[in-house]
Each structure stands twice: as C-alpha cells, then as structure tokens.
Amino acid sequence: AQSVAQPEDQVNVAEGNPLTVKCTYSVSGNPYLFWYVQYPNRGLQFLLKYITGDNLVKGSYGFEAEFNKSQTSFHLKKPSALVSDSALYFCAVRDNNGGGFKTIFGAGTRLFVKA
Amino acid sequence: GAGVSQSPSNKVTEKGKDVELRCDPISGHTALYWYRQRLGQGLEFLIYFQGNSAPDKSGLPSDRFSAERTGESVSTLTIQRTQQEDSAVYLCASSPTSSHRETQYFGPGTRLLVL
Image 1: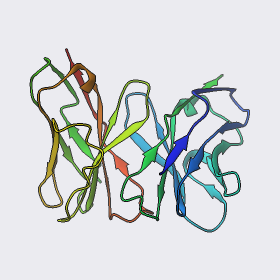
Image 2: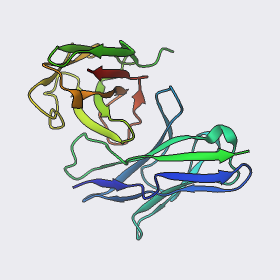
Image 3: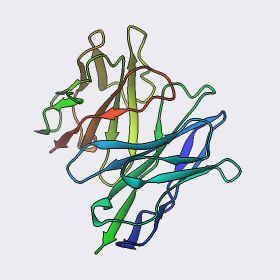
Image 4: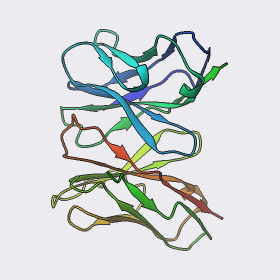
C-alpha cells in the first residue's frame, strides 16, 4: 500500500537561511512524487513533481526537491528562505503499480520563516 | 484562465441535515477528485471521476457520502444525515487527464461545520 510520512509537524527557520521539509514514502511500484503548498485561506498549489530522470527537481518559487530511491525520500529544499514561504506544505505520492488513481498525501508540515 | 471553483465557500448545518457541495473543474479537464481535510490533518481521498468511466469510490467513508459528475463538467458531493465528525474542508481538484504524471489543480474548498 502507498504511504507518505512527513515526520515534522512544524519547521522554523530564519529568513535567508536554507530550509528543508522532509518527506519519505512507500509504494509498491515506481513512485510519482509531488509537493503542494497551502497558503492561509487559499487552495493548494502545485510546487514540483518527480516523474523520472534527474533526481533533482526544480519547481516554483525557488524550491527544489531531491528524489533518493535508496532512502525512499523526497525532501523539499530552498537555499534561502523568505518570510512569504511561511505556509503548509504537503508531500504526495502515486504509484504505477495498482495504486489506482489515488494520490496519497502526507499530514503536512507547517513552515514558519521568521524575519 | 479560470481555475477550479467550489461553492459554497462556507456551510454551517445542523446534525442530521443533508448538504450538497459543488465543484466546477477547469474546462477541458477530464479527471476530477474530491478530498476531505480535517482540521490539522492531511488530505483524505474520497472519490475520483475520469470521463465516462465508473468512478473510484473507494475513499468514501460511509454510505452517507455520494458524488455525481455530469460528463466532464460539474460535480456535486452530497452528505446525507450529517454528523459532527463530517466537519472539515472539502477540496475538489481536477487534472487534464488521469495519467499518474498529472498535476492536480485544487479549488479553494468548502468549509463545512456541522453543529
């Protein structure tokens, strides 16, 4: 069965510092991995996804994520955090081996960036 | 272009009443998803529609929940005999196709409160 874990409920960073939001997954087939962001009072927005190819994926707003097959991880990163990055971040996974059309979302990690 | 829209944005109802939530997907998107997001939790898959194929209803929590979609347009999620535990934000998403690679585009959600 598919599953996603975001081990941190909250991440606090200072503006200008690098940030990492962790995600690990479990699937039976090849994973398709996604990061979405939810700003206050707004819907979820797509950030980036890994389908195949280069393990380092670059997305919107300067975010990137690295697919690590051996560690089954897909951590979200940004070299220099902005206060405006403060939001709720969700990691999600689908697989191509009987997972159907479900996308499994993690519980979310709240990012606070302090000025 | 127009994104996914949902109505109402907020709904307060009394326990035992029926409610109907509406989703208008992005024009041309063949796939449509409903999710539930309880306070402080991740997204819970409810149901998936793809064109004229039979929907994937495997995430519906009970027979009080049902959903319909007219062709590749509007979808309605109906909750009968609402219970307090149904209180949540109900999110709708659409994607151009049902491919596992596709990004989902989310609406702003309907916040349901059952008193």
